[in-house]
Length: 568
Image (cartoon, rainbow, N blue to C red; front, side, top):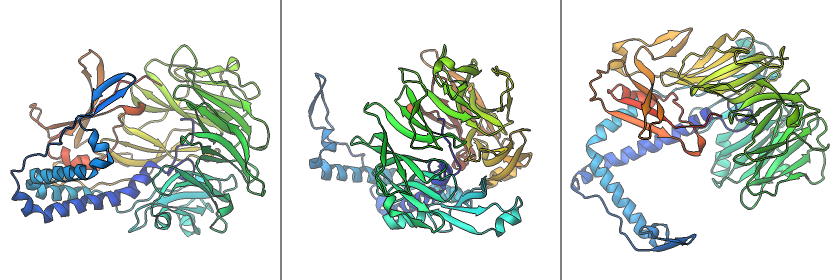
């Protein structure tokens, strides 16, 4: 929260969900197809054992004690090295049983895989997004498993100028995978002059990341700056100076270092956090004015400011940590804009204060807490401030003009962007250009394939840049054509998506998102699939998933149960 979530989050905070999913989808599908081919190969041998009984794991008494409490764990042997061979044999038995039970579904499995494969986009690429004098974009090459990240100089505003500009390769994740046998990109940050790229890489799946710095003018990795155990990185503004966090023996980012790339001296320790319950992160304000050292626990936060134009200067604390108080900081024209839960409500509100007096006693409210509305994130541009909200659990985007004309913008302040669907999921683009007049959003819903828009921040008008075009089942094509509105595709003429409230056993109302075909006869006999998830404080997003069409087209009803959650 409070950090840039991106397009390709690659160039700016981390690898994007869409790019990551597109990179993995090929290998996942091949693995899936491979398992089906194995089942088909063993079909007749499996049929001969169709009456096989499910294997039963043996129970072996084993006493455990923790905090003075004793209990019997009959399956402890599964976690013991001595029981490895027996466990492997048991798993093979379960696989044989599953093959036998599912053997008569092999023709259906093949049809489903063919359907799902046919809906996959043939071209996996993101539309270019401008940042300063460059256009940045990514695409998965034919035959590749992972995305490649590119840029071209912005020599004009039309498509022809973009296509004729020289294409530069920033990172090829396929090459990285070939070099190390594994490729998981963490943070990726461009320097202010766009000449250097700092990125972190997990080379073996251990979640222990290594920092690399690449000179984009030569394409060479500067090996002298390679550093192990780095989690987050950020550049200062006016000199090649890099801040980064390093983990301790518990894999906790606990130290912040500063390194000048023009010097041969050792990195300087900027801050060390000794409280084992807290994690340190380094970021920057969007206008490149300040670096922010964020010290967070699960329930509280503390932010220190570093002058990005004077990275060797002293730190300034915004508000000292205190229990149950969280806050996140941005900067605009001499003011700190802060999302915080400090106040009469536990929900987040937007406040601001002069940067010279950052303490909470100087915080003035900009957007007050509204009933049934949660502020979940913000973004700042030269002329606008963007608030990402949820109203009754559904996303909405509010725009405030900067500089603020009034000290307090109440519940009716600013304006909302028109969204193509009420029930939808929003993923902000990189939006790294502080002086941009447009906002990049990728939007999808259960009935709307993923679409990328540029919203004019002054007028709110959306421009569609790209949208997935799924192939539809023949029976669906015969029943009607997909509807379009202002150019984007949605399938609301073919399927129904509604929200309902279900009452739980303890009387609490639980929101449900329910999807089904418009051809469904409501007799209470249709098969249904109920999905629910709420671990780690995450919401169950009702995103577009083309694979679900295979169920909807066969008369299934899909329901998503949204967990009870504290707003904010």
